[in-house]
Amino acid sequence: MLWWIALFNYADRQAIFSVFPLLEREMHLSQVQLGLLGSSFAWVYGLCAPFAGNIVDRVRRKTAILTGLESWSLICMAAALSRNFTHLLFFRAAEGLGETVYFPASMSMISDYHGKATRSRAMGIHQSSVYIGTIVGGFFAGFIGQRYGWRWSFVVFGALGMALGWVLHRFLKEPARGAADFEDLGDGTPPARPHLPLISFLKIIWGTPTVLLLMLGFMCANFMATVLFTWMPAFVYGKFHLSLAMAGFTATVYIQLASMFGSPLGGWLADILRKQTPGGRIIVQAVALFLEAPFAAWCALTGSMFWLAVSLSLWGLAKGFYEANIFASVFDVIRPEARGTAAGFMNLVGWLAGGSTAPVLIGYLAQHTSLEAAIAKASLCYVIAGALLTAAIVFFVKRDAGKLESELRAEAGGS
Image (cartoon, rainbow, N blue to C red; front, side, top):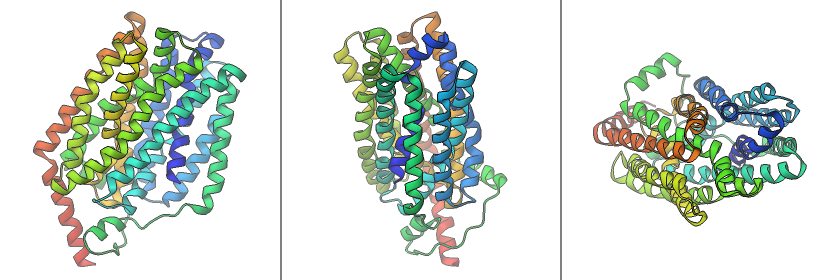
């Protein structure tokens, strides 16, 4: 059920990028203005993420998830009313507000169904919905847009999301917080957990260097992910002279299908390595990041459709290995009652510092050089991210994971 919600989460946010050429012609938008449409979502999504995560740790996660789904679906439909750039900017920002609650709530919920042995696989399978949603949003928005106008793309996706929310009110169930962690310790009945004040959470983060490094790595990785979502359809459309629908499809299908396979595989490998070492999940992520850098640059610089497909596929495979473990790695060193807030802070750093800057910066560089040169240079972000995660593996994760396990064992014994 969460898989389907995440599919619409990404289909709705991706839809606008495939109709960039239609918006550019109708509203006479510059590349920087188009970039701002991507950044406005990321600014609001990132700014609100820590507050949304803190709320998730205090309320029923089912309520947060379904309220968010219905809110962003309604906003997606309302975007069809836009008549100028200001209207579009407002609705894109508002959609970021609706969507920001989903990942903190869903990742927290999955972590209470799956402990150390299966958590990465579960989150990797869930992550595959992101890639399918991006393909669906990229292709069908372009397909609907070029036949019926870009407004109908938003109406269709928003209406389907609303219908899904109504159905899942009956069926979605929520586990107890910390259930999987206490099963790992041989005690399946977690004690009641008080709400963690934000100041206490910040102290935990400051005292857990592994989390700080994972957040900085996610910032760099998400910069490139946002470049991919925002600019790749326009890049393919302009460089290879495809139709709007085929440009949106080509820009998403290879990388997202490869990521869809890479994510469960990356989760499976991370679960195996986590049994051997506390840094097992981060090892998988770091290797994937170092591989993504040359694949992303190759994708930007090739002039062949065949090699574009190959480079996008390899980029997507490595991307899936990394993204399967984004939250699972953090949850190895963060307490159950703080995981929603932790996921929110991950999104704050990843989307505000990384995702929100990428569309505008790449648009600016493209205006002064070329889009392919801008994307190729940006691929260095992956090297920086890989180095940050390597530091976490070498210096901090063993200590931080051991500290959390000791605390939970003490609580299990006390209860």
